[in-house]
Image (cartoon, rainbow, N blue to C red):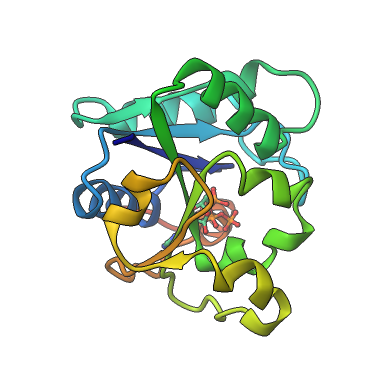
Length: 196
Ligand code: ATP
């Protein structure tokens, strides 16, 4: 039986409660041993981050301090070049060979998953846990029906029984918070209290 480890990658520009509460709920619902937060250095699919690397790292560290099971993993920040998740997952697999990696992503991120670098290889390295997010359009699953059909599961047992390749949809509390909205507020001089 594999031990389950959550992997939560993001730009975290900045980290907010829309990241934290869902990650916490996933950890509890799936009985994950830990959730590793991995801020990326240079996200390949978007503009460079607004906050500098060290500020993003420190904000994640502060936000998760004292939460048992939440861990900052800054390996992408230390790596040169774009942060490809496939490389990160391969590194994690190497470091934690006894764990099944559960890669947590919002439904919005999953919509673009088949445009990710070597996405098929990602499914050979981890399970995908897709969390609900307000405003995220459910993707046209027909587009990747073949990939999904044999993998979709609705129980934690499936994640424990196989090392990788299962896809689980997990409902979490819907918090309509985004880092872009927070950045806009900051730029406009508006308060971001209780969002972060
Ligand atoms: P931005 O607004 O700059 O695009 P973001 O708020 O989406 O940022 P990211 O760091 O890009 O934050 O997201 C990291 C991961 O967290 C992604 O998988 C994303 O789908 C998920 N996520 C972010 N915000 C939420 C939320 N409010 N509810 C559920 N998942 C979320």
